[in-house]
Amino acid sequence: MLKVRWFRVLLGLVLVFLTVGVGGYLVRETLFITFLYSGSRADWELQQLRNRATFEKEPESDVALMDECLAIAREHPGTRTELAAYLYAEHRWPDQDKGIPVFDELMAAAEDYDLDDWANALNDSRNGASEWERWTPLAARLVDRIEREPDHAAAARLLTELAVLLNPEFAAESAPPELLRIANLVAERFAASPDLANFCEVAADLYSSAHYTKPFEPYVRQILSVNQDRYVRCSASLALASIVRAHGASRQDEARQLYQTFLTEFNGQTVYPAQGVEEQCRQWAFNALEVMDNRGFGMTAPETRGIDLDGDPIALEDFRGRVVLLSFWASWCPPCLKAVPLELELLHGFEESEFAIVGLNADDVLENAAAAVNEHGIVWPSFRKSSHEEVWPTYGYPTYYLMDREGKIAGYWLGTPSKAELEEKIRFLVEQ
Image (cartoon, helix red, strand yellow):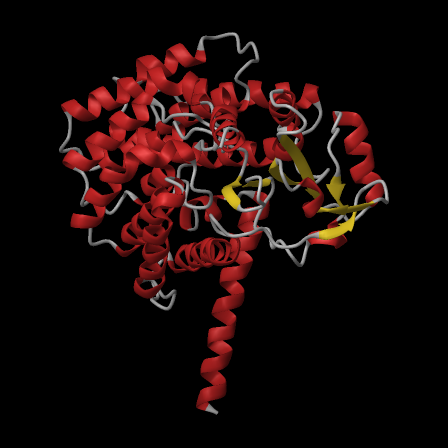
């Protein structure tokens, strides 16, 4: 009977908590703001606005949301909410006439707000867009402040948020200079900080081994030499493997060893707040090793035969004697379609007898692929999905493999590399 009584009490407490939490969330009552939400009521209003903006499609309503966001900023001068609202407005509506010079307001605020407020506001306003050129002046001014206030408790966290702000696209030919400045400051003054996990993710592009990440190797090594935080070490260890892999064929054995060491040290079994992230990082490491072990540099490309999008037979062997860029794409993949003009430029930059592009399409509906071919002017043949999906496991789109004249793999990219990088590697193989 005693066990039943305690069970009923516990069940009652759970129901009360759910009623207060869910009910308060739905109607935004004072109980929810007071007991279950860590920010202020103004922060909560801004968060709800951002949630609505995420799903807004109508231009008129979108402008109304922008006006509401700016009103929240004006109603809370001198607060973190004002800063976060201005940052979100500049992120979400960069080209809209806001009636006030929002970016100028942010530049002025760089000297006024506490570094902790900046770190929190930048974290809240992340939107995933790569616009580092536009944000560089603001980042530079805040880095100047950190250099003057290096002992501030939020200094390392703000440097990490600024690195995220300046994170370039995968295709960037080089790292933004201000991002390298941040990396140098991190390595010199803050390498032992527990706030650097996201910095390591930016420095290495953990998932894709981007070309621009190569200069960050010494900074990541410095973090690994002194940092004891498990989450930071997890990110930094995978970052180092990714950066070494980005150097190409000459360092693949070293990269393979680093991935294997990472998997040994970070087994995904330790219970801590970033355990889920660690498990995701392990999957990326497994994916990288699978590619390196089965379709790595110097290996002959798997024999691939099938049917193209027009219903005609196609085989990779048909292109032997030419340098070939394999392009894994789909009509539902915006980055794939965005890359078509770059691919056309590459195709027209070499003789037909020297270089070819071959697509490997991932559409389940053939008509969708055919429509994309016509709309975007794709002139090279593509294997149908059923012809290649078991031969070429793919971990994201677009993916590219570069093969030499003998059909050996000479390049791999998960994401669209820069035209300069592709052109350089293709020309090297053509002239061999």
